Image (cartoon, rainbow, N blue to C red; front, side, top):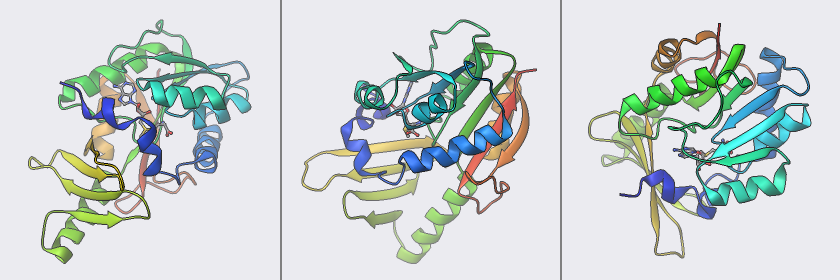
Amino acid sequence: MTEWFEQWFGEEYHALYPHRDDEDARRAVALIQRVISWRPGDRILDLACGPGRHAAELERLGGHVVGFDLSRAMLRRARERTRARLVRGDMRALPFRDGSFALAVNLFTSFGYFLDDGEHGLVVRQVAAALAPGGHFVLDYLNAEQVRRTVQLSEQTKGRGGTSERRSGPRVNRRIGPDGRFVIKEIELRGQARSFQERVRLYGADDLAALCDDAGLRVMARFGDYDGAPAGPTAPRVILVAARP
Ligand SMILES: C[S@@+](CC[C@H](N)C(=O)[O-])C[C@H]1O[C@@H](n2cnc3c(N)ncnc32)[C@H](O)[C@@H]1O
C-alpha cells in the first residue's frame, strides 16, 4: 500500500506551504548557526531536505551538504537551488557511513510520519550513528501541545470534526486521529479532483527528547521558534539540539 508521504510530497505540496520559503529557511539556519558552530567544509546531512531551501543556506554558510529525501519531485526542486549532493531514499534505511557527518538536521516537521513508533526510533538511531563523535542533530518539529489545543478549541467552537480552513488555495481540515496519536490534515486542492492526507505523530518535546536519549544523543537545548524563544506550551515549534557524546 502506498503511504501518504509518498503521495503528498509532490508538486502539489507547495500550494499549501508557500510561506515556508527561503527567508523562513534562513531564520532556521541562523538559529542553528548561533547554537552550533560548524567549520567550513564540515559535512552536514539535511535529512528530508525537500526542495533544498535549508541545504542551499547551509552550503552558502560553508557547509558541505548532503540532501536526502524520498520524493523525486522535491529533489528536482532542490537541484535547481543548491549544488549540494542529493541522495534519494527512505529515512528508515540511511545509506551513510557511521560517523560521517558533523551535523544532521531534520527541519519543518519532516519526521513522525510512520504508524509504528519503532520506525521513528530506528530513524533517530541511524542519524546518531551517522554523526561523528561530538556531532549534533537538530530536530525541528510541530509543537504537539499547541496543535492539540488549537484543534480542540476549534472543535468546541464549531461543534464538529476539526478545523477547516479555506486559504486562497487548498481546503484543509485538521483533526486529531481517533487514538489521539496523530494530527491528520485532509487537503483538497481546488480545481482538482484529488485530495491528500498528511498524518503526523503528536510527539511532545519530552517524547522527542526520549527518542534522542534512547539513540545515545544528549539533548543540550530546546527552543520554541526560529528566533530562539524558549520552548513552551504556546510556542509554534519544538526545536531540539542534541549532541553525540
Ligand atoms: C514537510 S516536508 C519538509 C521539507 C524540507 N525539510 C523543508 O523544510 O522544506 C517533508 C519532507 O520529508 C520527505 N519525506 C517524507 N517521508 C520520507 C521518508 N520516509 N524518507 C525520506 N524523506 C521523506 C518528503 O518527501 C518531504 O520532502
